[in-house]
Amino acid sequence: MSLDQKIVGYDLWQLALPVTTRRDHGIGSVEGACEIVVLRLTAEGGEVGFGEASPWVVFTGSVEASYAALDRYLRPVVIGQRVGDIPQIMAKARRAVAHCTEAKAALETALLDLAGRVSGVPVWALLGGKCRDTIPLSVSLANPDWEEEKDLLARITADGVGIVKVKVGFADHAFDVMRMEALARDYPDLKVRIDFNQGLEIEEAMQRVLDLAAFKPDFIEQPVRAHHFDIMAQLRAATNVPLLADESVFGPEDAKRAISEGIADGFSIKIMKSGGLRRAQEVARMAASAGLSAYGGDMFEAGLAHLAGAHMIAATPEITLGCEFYQAQYYLCEDILQDPFPSQGGVVTVPNGPGLGIKPDLAKLEHYAVRSSTS
Ligand code: MG
Image 1 (cartoon, rainbow, N blue to C red):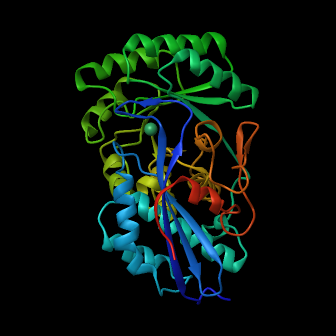
Image 2 (tube, rainbow, N blue to C red):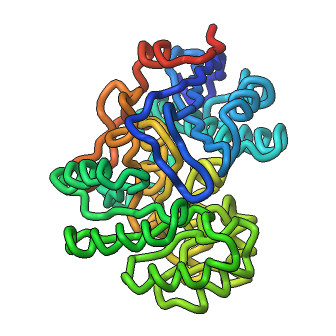
């Protein structure tokens, strides 16, 4: 069957995936479960494609909004369309519902997975080809209990992980300084990055950023609220450590303004922010064209979204700072994929099979479903 065949099936599962610990990230926390939506598209010939929406309510939006967008507003622009008409379907999707970028990322992921499986090529080939076989993996340190965090540090370093991102700005400044000192003392070979996740108030931001910049991390990410472009520019001017914008830059439209206002030295690129894989590539290319770096960020995701991000980064040479697809292996009690997400030895290995290369386990989707809409 060709790419001309119609999409005839559209199934959804909203999942609550138990997580191992509490995690604090600047402006918000995750505890108990990671909430996502999984979409399955089916073509006339029976082939299927999967995508994941991974929202976080204080950052991109709610799981309820993702589910509603996919179930009510995006379903009509997909059913009956041809498998190969991905750009047209995504253009209709952007017009059908505002925002809901995670739902649009899930849709484009599922469309690319389906087209890849129908034509026998990996998603990275559909995105322009592969520029790297592996992606360096960063694991985030966000546990408010530092004693528990030491167990994770021992585990990831034993596994060969060489990069950590310390989530700061959610507790007092002394806690952040203590952890930076401990990492420098006990893990001198680790590459360390810092992410405030918008956690700082304007009046405290400059001093706290300069204090942590003294530890010479690889970069410092998003100290203040997304809309404070002016404060970001001031912080960037005051420190020699590269400043990354994450929450300030969702899609190409934000990237254009961020570049013109000089708010950052690099962008965290996420398919859940940009509303799809190709728009994420566009943000990375805009960054590179302006002399900025790009990092492969993620949300609280399961392995299905990690796969989409890995294929996107594999096909995007401008994203040079690695990725943070660690949740499937190090945060969820159990992932949803049939085979483990391929991260070992401190790198993510890009799959080469058709589509995303690995499918979700349907029994796990049913097991963790809070609600579903399947035929
Ligand atoms: Mg971030």
